[in-house]
Length: 452
Image 1 (cartoon, one colour):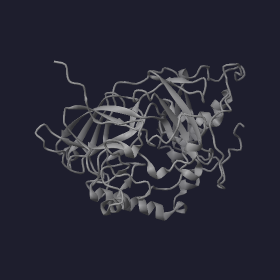
Image 2 (image 1 turned 30 degrees about the vertical axis):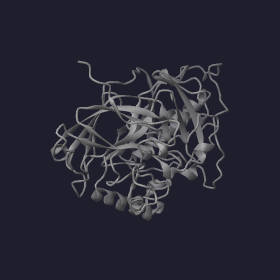
Image 3 (image 1 turned 90 degrees about the vertical axis):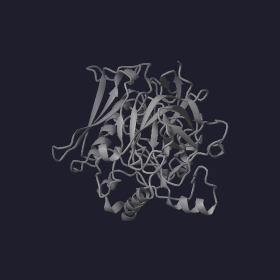
Image 4 (image 1 turned 135 degrees about the vertical axis):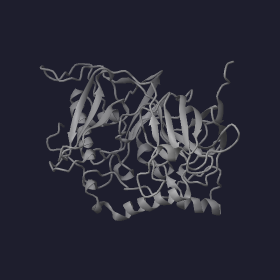
């Protein structure tokens, strides 16, 4: 007997704003945000999602919407979804929630996405000290492939995935998050050596009522005012899963999420058509609206059976991810290496972040020799199916990080040649990349030996 079409439990109307949807969305983590739907284990169901900005970015040739985006509003998530077993018994704290991705894709009629660099004064990105200007590229989808008029000569298959899949935190876990992230913010940049070479700010996104959307909880009510001051932002990944941005989490994948509240209260959003490892531009995947078809199971007492806490409480655990069988096939890669030495030539000790930054900068500078602006390459490396690795972490003083780029995504051969770098008609410079001016006064970092 043919199984029924998956039940649509969270619909999205693309003509309406995020806060106008039939089932209200939310953009915070809190145990008291009420569930908007309930599903039973083994049931295949469908969840639709707006893009992470709630439709704030337009399909046009201006980056002004990127420059002026209010970061307090993101991410818009669909859910929470209460999970029960066939007898109606809910998932309980200490269980593991198994979430299987059966199918996914862009919403019909909305087959486009965007990649962006945030203004340095408005969140920035991994290389914000090198690229401080708000910049945008639009991508269009042709089945499994993406192409951009703003980054010509490139076409690649997308490995579509949700950036965010997570369960609601308990009150205790929420308090742990807020305490440790507040201490990080209070300590300031002077307390952390890495802040001298990585300039993305703020250090942590703390709870704030500004831009807060709490689903069914009415804005302005005493309950809303209290929860809005406590609810955690969705920006980082944490013990509940959340914004992990694992690019291989596509069809056939499973997520084993810790359960901290009754019913699990599963939420998801931040759909990506494609992403490179690290999502280095911050708004760096091909962001889109989309849908997920999911199936859930409950492993009773699964946290105790399978997860070992790495911290002072049983709540200091992390999810497990099982990658599915669907991936683009590439056989040839160009790999760029980085070591723990920053742009000033200063040695750092086994610092994989500095090493990865250098690997990305090496790749950007190299590919800019083939007719692309460095901003185009930065956006491309953030969203194409490139592979980031920590290749060495024990040989003092240098960690070694690598970034592997599939050669086949380009319409020209980007490998080094005995002859000169090609300058033929297939290499197209595009001065029309949507950008805004940088109006701040923070200094930019310059590599004295980089190409212009």
